[in-house]
Length: 128
Image 1 (cartoon, rainbow, N blue to C red):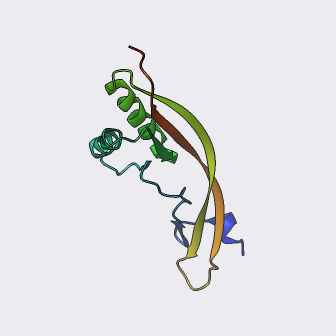
Image 2 (tube, rainbow, N blue to C red):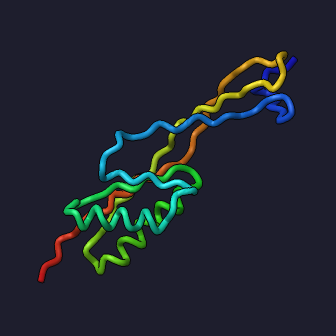
C-alpha cells in the first residue's frame, strides 16, 4: 500500500492546515488575512498613527499578500505624503496534518512553503 503522502486520496485522507508561525505580536503589528474587514484594518492603522506611533508593520501570508499590499498603498495614498514604506518578502514553512478517514490509514504530516510579505509603513519628515 502506498503511503498517504503519495496518494493523498481525498476520499481516504483529510488535510488539516496548522496555524502558521507568528512573529511576536506587538501593538504595531497588523496581520492581514482574506477574512479580515479591510475598512476596520484601515481604521486601526490610522488610529495607531494618530496615537503617536511612528511606524507599523503589515504582515500578509499567501493569498493575503495582495490585500496587505493594498492596505499599505491605501494608507500611503491617503496620508498626503507623510507616510512611506519598505517591503520585505519571505517564505514561511507551514505544516499540514494528513489524517486518515478510515482506521486503516496512518497519520502523517507534510511541510510546504508559502510566500509572505512584511511591510513597514512609517512617518516621513516633511520639510516646510
